Image (cartoon, rainbow, N blue to C red; front, side):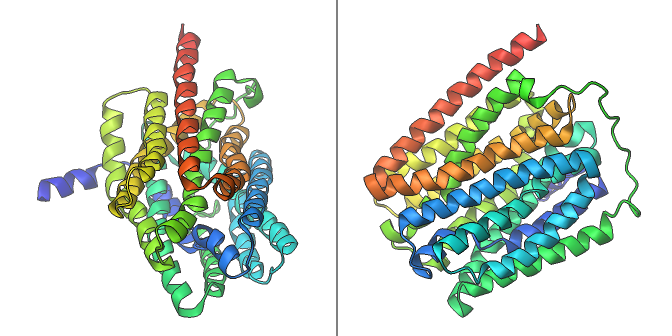
Length: 401
């Protein structure tokens, strides 16, 4: 056991202090964003929105994310990653508090659009900061550490969110989200302020390649959109499935979702270190991760046994553990041939676009065809994504020749 623990700790060695601080800031921020996993339940139970209305609200969520990510990428290339991250965290904290006062369909659509516009300007800036703070040989593990912080927060957030809902209602989630975003901003101001932290900025590319002319990256973008579309069902249709089909309470849903974050926190870094040592293609590993996430849906149709929910969440977690770090790492490495903010913005926009379509399409399909048919369709879509990634492997091989 002692040897196992030492090997686990060794997987974290060599990462910079700045990456550790960035991870802590991300953990504080992510542990507070507990509104999101419960958003579909809040809209249906507290505001009495229909499933169709929830789908459109989630599309506004995604549209705000797209616009915010694009603006964040542009601003990162113009004014730098630090200022973008600071303003995003402070603004998001204030806006989350005000979002609780949106009660009509139009108000909530507008409110969630503005919140996500400000919140997701953080993402491309954070990825560029991660690239600056990371040593070349540690990029995938640096990304993994930040993801561990996200998932540790995700593990604590939904479980705490379930307790808050049971104790004081959904309104407590909005206040908690707002306060934690502001706390994350204050910590960023204190520990990663450029006046206090000296980092070696990477040399700017003199003739940057436009991301929109990078064929391989555009194919990668499509595959990431599909991955995001599949994965994000766990934030909209899956909680509803747990509630309506499996009759779980909000607290039990929080515990089940929190299990994913805990598993990822414990196993992702050793898994990534092991996969890195195998020297496998990043794209092939991403395809494997997408495959696991895809089959986590189809197995829900196989049995009414409650244990299948745990198997499904574990398969999703395994796929997420593999696909996200290596896709992040591939995007960061590819971005060094162009403007990093532009590349990382497009990478993030793939998931933002998925937000626009994923929740809405998922809700409309469940409303019209039911959960079983929806899970079959989602699994088929995942397999299409795997085939696109297989094609990308061939494109990248031709680049080398």
